[in-house]
Every structure is written in structure tokens, then in C-alpha cells.
Length: 389
Image (cartoon, rainbow, N blue to C red; front, side, top):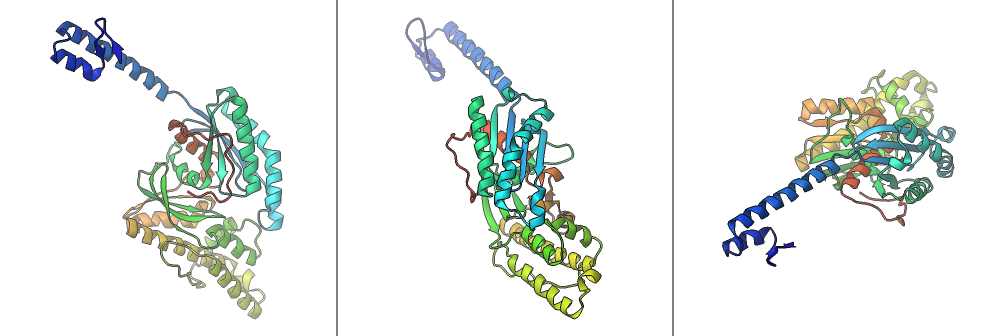
């Protein structure tokens, strides 16, 4: 709103109204239109400059046993540093207390390395994104506390991120040779702690339509592998040996769970009883049939996942499928999804290998998308081990 020299109130609607009421001459009317057009052009030029500005996000991931920091420039990853914790291997699984202690040791050097590799100074950062949950509480607290303190010290926005959303939105990181899904699509997150089918309508409009009621798919791999004498994690070893064996050598029943939910605890027990029975009759059974056992285990697990996806696509009518999570690195699952494109008419999206396991780059892309919407966190935000999508 502005005032003219003769005290006539002027706004966009008022210009034309005053002209019709003959309170403005044609000359003044045209002058005002030109004035407002110049203002609009200046605003658009300023907005265009802002939208093309490079946004630098520091992202921190510490939900489980990997300490990771990444720097993103808009939707492009400049660095993605991950410090693995080997100490858990001797225990056959993640020990929460040891994980949180390792995070405390790793987080400062990992962040320093991420900044150095990206050739970015901390003063150039626009915001800090961090994993709020879900995950191990002690591990989450390390990342959350560091992110809050660093953001406060730099006086820049803090952005909390849901770890499970990040696995899905990792597909929107710009990478040469990788296409991004369009909305709506189905996201399947498969990892050591989670197994979900998510209906994704937009970046932050997601609905979980199926999930495990007990063990996750990653646990099915690890516990089956432990029965066979493998170390932790067992998934990669089963996957490698499965490629050398006969997937139909041994039959394992699939759990019968209604709807789109999963169950893997019964499957793990079935593997245990099967091995115990066969070893009782032949002590060398595992050694003599290891590749076939692994192939049969993997064949059954993949069958469970694909069957649920087939049901989900029928119920929703959505044929775009994007997978994420550590188990999505499995070669058998990736092949089964690609086969689904020909058999069922699916369009499938598999992320770059380094974005499948827990990593800060996926946290960073969510942070960037939230930054564009000015969706910032308060400094009293708390970690949540059971955070839901």
C-alpha cells in the first residue's frame, strides 16, 4: 500500500478502481502501472538470485554404530565420511554402550574430515541437519548434542531429520546415472532394524502401510548366518555364497502375515530347527551344503519381500518402487526388483551403494529440502529412539 500526492490510497486493485471512478488520469494510471511493474521485476530478480544461491548443509548421522558426516551443496554431495565401528564384530551384534562411546571419539574428526574434503569452512554453512531418531538412544544423543552445540555456536539453523524418511529421500540426491522417482511411489526400507513399506505422496507426506511385527529382514540374515557360523554382519556373506548355490535346494516356509506386514522371527526359527535336524544326522551337513543353504535362505527372504510388494502395488495402484536401507545393497534383492520391471510392470529405483547403509548424505538431502521450507528445529529438540514417520 502507498499514498499518492493527492492522498488517494493506491494498491493493485485500487489503481484500476480509481481510474474507473476518474480519480486518476490516464497518464497517472499508466505511470503507476509502470511503477508497479518495475517493482515486480526487481522482486523477481532478487528472488531468482536467492533461489539460485548455493546452500551448504552439514549433516550428522549417529543412529546406530556408524558415525557419519556429510557436506551437501544444495542436493549434491560434496563429501560423505563414515567411520565404522569394528568392535561389535566380536560380540555378534551392536553393543549400545560401546557404540555411543565410539561416536564420542569419532564425531569431531569425522566432521573435520567432511569439511576438509568438501573444501568448505564452517563459516560457510547455512544449517546443520542431524538424525533425531529412530535408533539407539545413546548413539542419537551424541549426534544430537554435537549438532545443537555447533549450530548454536555458528548461529545457524538446526534441522532434525527422521532416519527412516532419510533412507527414502536419499533417492533425491543428484547423482549422475541415477534417476529420481516421481510422486507418488512406494518406498521399501530394509535394514538391520527396520522393514517397512511406505506410501510416499510428497517429500514429507508419507504413510507406513506395512512393517515388521517382530524381527527386521536384516536380523533374519544375521541370525541365520550366526546359526551357520558366520560373523557379524552375516548378510554380505550369505549374499556372496547364495550366488554359488541352488536357491531351491531346501524349502523354507514363508510366514503367513495378514495385510502388508512382515514377520521374520518364525523364519529364523525354522532355519535353526532345520539345521539342528540335519546336523544331527550328518555332522558335516553345513560344510557340505553351505552354498545351497545360503541360496535357499536368500531365495525365501526375497520371496517374502517381493510377495508383499506385489500386494502393495495391487492395493495402491502405484507401480513405482524405491528401496533403501542397508539390506538394499543385497545383489539378490536388487536383481529381483529389476526382474519385477519385466514381470509386473514396475519402475524401480535403487540408490547408489554408499547411500544404502547408514550415512550422513541421506540426512543432508532431507536437511536441504527442509531448509527450502524454513522447517527448522528449536534448540531444545530431543532425540527420540522410537521416532515414527
